[in-house]
Image (tube, rainbow over all chains, first blue to last red; front, side, top):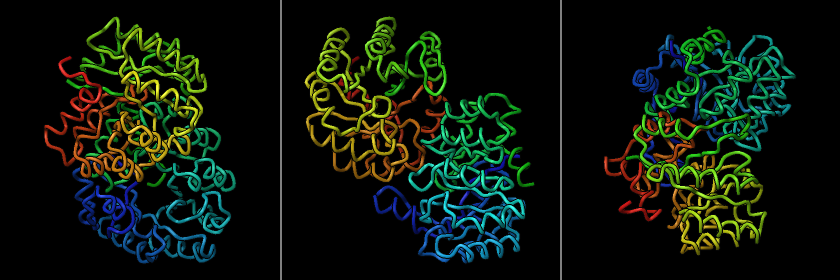
Length: 258
Length: 249
């Protein structure tokens, strides 16, 4: 089974796509739940971890966005594993309360995007939310790779404080992949998601930590089905062993969230 | 035939770990993927500071396989006047068509006046200047555009299409008609945005081999939406040949 650990429900075209469009390089479009399932089909992906994109922007209501994700997962329970988000820097307790609400409604993970949500990943504002995740053993995925707010070592700081929470370093740390791999080497509760990783980065990670905590991710719908395919070619050329590929393409994600 | 604008060759080097490369194996890998020619730059310590040896490796590779490899030279700008002299000497020996600058490995900011004499020497030799792009601060696209803007008569390339600083690249290419973007490492959505805005003409295929794979980098451009066959062909080689003035070769 192919599981993608990084997919957005892009219900509107504010934010990222609007920016690309303003710079003259995108035909912005929205992807509702049905269109996202169609995209998974075109991309050869059986199931994905799904989180909002619009709800990561402060000008949108993240509770509404979380509800859209929860509804999408109700509609397509075999295809979507719902993740929620919250804005910890406005009110740390309120953020934890929003996450609790979403977990009670079926969310299986939490996504934070420190760059878009305007807080450093090591912020103490996250502690109430992460206490809750520790209590319920809920994985937390961070966007990383965009300094100064989204550094892998900032995520590691949280991973050390909350050893019972699985932390997923989204985008493999991008240009900070060395720190991403080091974080996973030092902390058994740090996992790495591959969108943003290059072939040599993946080979390096395999040598240092093996493949058991590496998760296939694409960042869809950004880049579309071609990007999903390219991400698989990239991993296959870095890690030729089919058993190891199977772990990265789905086995590890299923182990982390059934 | 595919032209690879960004490939590395040094027999043994360190880049996060030990690497060994074999020239014949590289040729075989290119053959497997339909890559006709590759521009070779030094890697690891041979790009960082042992540049004289690094340049000798790529020059020797081009001598062994004159139809397959072009040497791209690098010099650490901290070598200052001696570096300028080293560039002239190496260029005299091989007629290289590009200078590679690597702000991260070589430890300088892309628009530091430190680099101006070296860039001026390269431009006087009619060399293209390729700057590895995208690392925070040292090699951000706006810095590379600032350098390119100082020398409108020159030809400059942002390596990795600016990598994670992709938001800046469309503005940089718009401001600097003498600036191109090389495609390795960057993602489809970012390259698509550049292709839609500028057409195919400002993009150059690079593999970043051995840090990335030919199958991955080639497949990525084959999958890139919004291009006709002629545009794809241009990115895979035509643009590079024009930029490097290799017509007829």
